[in-house]
Length: 94
Image 1 (cartoon, rainbow, N blue to C red):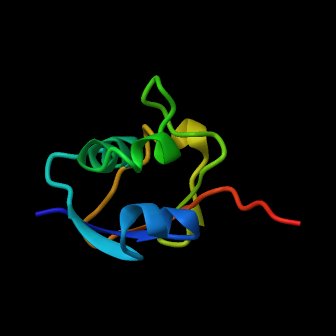
Image 2 (tube, one colour):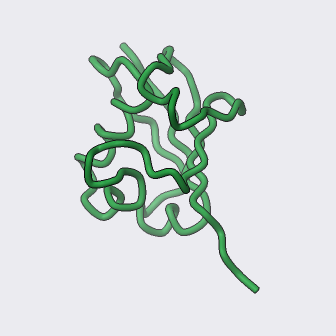
């Protein structure tokens, strides 16, 4: 069984309706597949995580176990049971 903890920061927390969730990611092989899986379960999150082509949004910061993941590496970044994925959207302000 593959359980991944998703942590939503800033406005993603509001859109997801929670700050944290444990995702059953059985059958998910990579970080990108996990985000596509989550986006498929929550249509409001989809445009905040993925571009129209299904790739990771370039403005989204993603960390796995407190280590940043480059967008180009999301499809190759494998996940293990108990990993924590933190999603941090771009923050604007003045």
